[in-house]
Length: 151
Image (cartoon, rainbow, N blue to C red; front, side, top):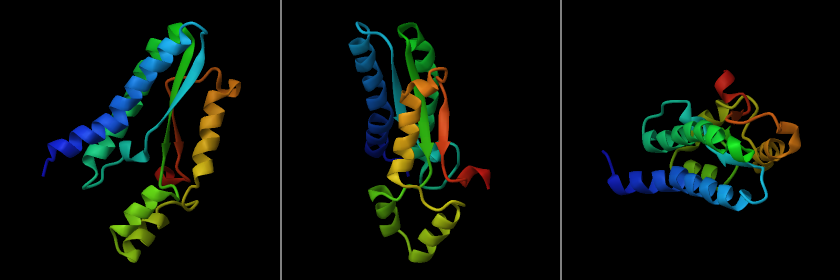
């Protein structure tokens, strides 16, 4: 069942806020030049899951927006990239766990060959993408998924 309010909120939080952030960053950086933006998407944007359609669509939209913004902001020397993590040991994982049986959660964890990610795994990927070590990378989505999509 389509829930318009849930759809609007999800798209606003996951996509609209990212576009607003990019606009604000560009205006702020236009005087000083350069910089890097890294959005956080999800592997959900790559896979189909029942009951997760709107969230997945918002994250896939964010990955697409990353590519478009990378080309738009290139003239201002601003690189734009995205990270798509799998399940991270976090509050979001705890909320997922609360809505399923232990067997279901264990099955979900088993889909991650390297186990659940940690917040610092995502933070390290962000640090790489904003640093000069990634100076020639823009418009990309980096999977941080512990092998989830490789299986």
